[in-house]
Image (cartoon, rainbow, N blue to C red; front, side):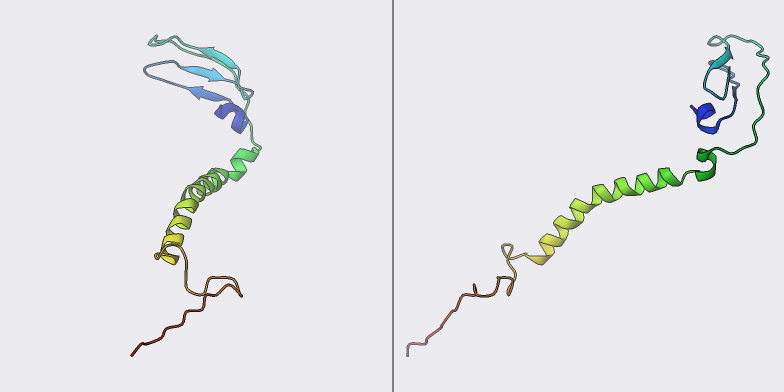
Length: 110
């Protein structure tokens, strides 16, 4: 994946596992077996130009991570704001539309 992403050959040297030579287009040019001592010899192209992934770096990953975090936190913050606003049954004094106010009259019988 990194070979294709960066447009460069990748050489994987593993002391345990599989060693390999991977071309810039993602093809595996040569590889060893698992836990097999071996030598790999290959001619790989040298590349100088930087790919889009090289130029942008980790920027897109950070943007996507922050968008995901904001998506997860938004409902929690909305719920909390709703609780803070209307602790007494969900209505706030003066929150009724005009013309729907209730008139309350009090009389003292004496």
